[in-house]
Image (cartoon, rainbow over all chains, first blue to last red; front, top):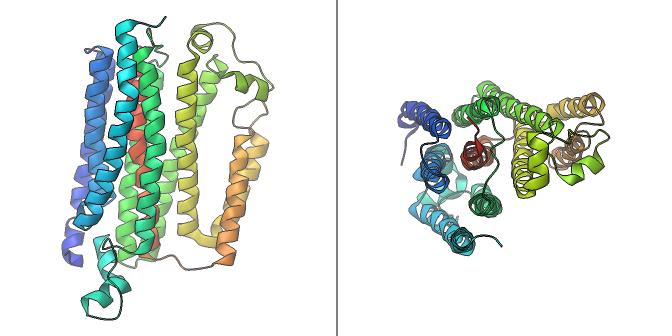
Length: 103
Length: 272
């Protein structure tokens, strides 16, 4: 439970989150310029950074962190589950095409 | 935002042992409804992003049409959206303090950032199309002919899956941002927003040339005007902290989706 005064005091944390999101974006752009990784590895690294950014947005800006545990887990598990199913649907085929080549 | 949840009559009644049934997920129904909508919408974007990644992995060589200027432009667009999320959070705080003036001001600031994003994105689309990056449907729809030779025209001819994925994904997102700006305008200004939206729609319809890709899509503002008017006149109400919070959820979601589109679409197709 949060009282109003405590909540107002914690407003600064949103500025920190905003700053962290800008810094992570800067890192992504730097990686894009440097191109030190091969495309598939680059895709993985950028996705990890994007997942961190999305967790910050969902947790703090969308305030899911402060919702009830039932709501939090219901949303996270259901959406993540759907994405995992999509992953298994799409990427084995993309990987097969890389290994076998397109004919 | 948690304060709004705690102060909701349903929750308060439950806490006091009153006759209200406890909310299933500890939140008021509007918020649960918006979360469910966002969960379903995330699957729409998820499918598009997975399709884009699939294309990216199996297409070799993948085109790299985004030069330094495009990346700088997209980075500024990203900063606009991230900043708009911060101003949205501040709007929710102001609404919870019942500070109407600052709620409106922060919502308007959010709309300014969102509009800047749309304008920058629209300018980039126009530039890319003029230089030859287009879908066959664009040429049929537009009066003018884009460039038929050069780097971008070659991509359109040889790797159509790039143009399809790029325009499909970014158009879907741009539509969401546009709806978000209008949604915030309705919450911030209520009926006063209708003439503003009408003026923007009519001015844009006259100012955008027929050869521009946005000449016809701009009429989505007219559709939004009719829908907004129906909502505001049939169910006039004074939007409260809960409404501001729910509109904020939608806005943050639009920001969230861009956090995946930006690296996937732009940074994975960078030409240094």
